[in-house]
Amino acid sequence: MYKKKLTIEEQIEDLRSKNIKFDLYNVEEAKKFLQYNNYYFKLKSYAQNYTKYSKVELSNQYINLDFAYLVELSTLDMHLRRVIVGLCLDIEHVIKTRFIRDITNNPEEDGYNIVNKYVEHDYSVLTSLYSNKDKSAARELIDKIKSNEEEIPVWKLVEVLPFGRFIELYNLYYGLYGGHSYSSYLGSVKFLRNAAAHNICLLNSLRKPYSVKINKCMDIMDALSKSRKFETSYKSKMENPVIHDFVVMLFVYYDALNTVGNRSMRDKGMADVRKLFFDTMIRNDNKEYFSKNDVLVSDYRYICQVIEYLENCRNKPVLKK
Image (tube, rainbow, N blue to C red; front, top):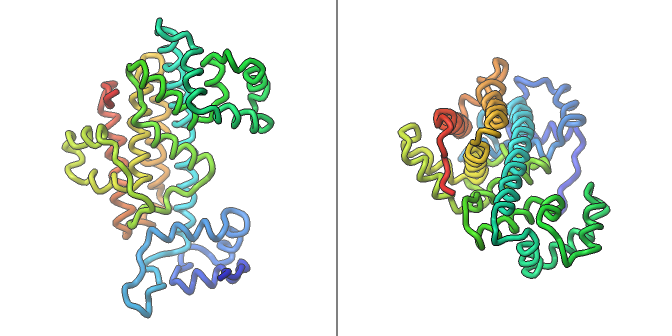
């Protein structure tokens, strides 16, 4: 059955019918927000972080939820996605650079053999590139690859592959030749990168039940278990797919950029993360908004603990590779 399209006024009334208050956010301003800043379906999704009354007659009523909280969560989510995109781009650049360096220093690999093996395993990687070349900023390079696809050097292919396809090539290479790699962590980085780049909400799914059950990254779980800072709280927090992948991404970021040539980039990126969590998220006009939501408060504190844990590593490796 189709749901009725709601006017802005009807959207406000629908929120009110669910016991979402307008004590902290003027109704007229709320109407403007729903017209120009965010749309109803997306904004309402953040209400999933709040509980409803258990009584049957009140089962559609949220407890302690103001429209201002939804606005603030949507705004913080925007800031979070922007930080994630920046971190993931840094990770992608650094691991591609290390990947090409490892191939350059590998006497058993000429830079063509690995591409041949990859294409032989899955030729669709090339057909996909060709069919989408007009949408790519690397169109000229894709044309050159197509003109001589029997001899494609890895340093050219890396420039045109989507990140997910690059991870396949990356995993193939290190599976064949061994060496230090981040293969077991890149699925999490890819998930967050794609979600953030496509403006998919991340802060709307912090309360159980979670949408999927994940396979936790045991190396990071082991690292967390050895720190007294986390006690046992990390076990339940890492069941949340978004929190799990965000923590994995932070570990990869800290570790992959933990070289003399990359530490200044890493420190800047980590400073952006710290500013978001230790400044923006608790600014004076909003820090009381979520104080009664135990899930949001505990998730926030956990991520802050992870940030402080990494900062205290003092340039020591934090991942097994």
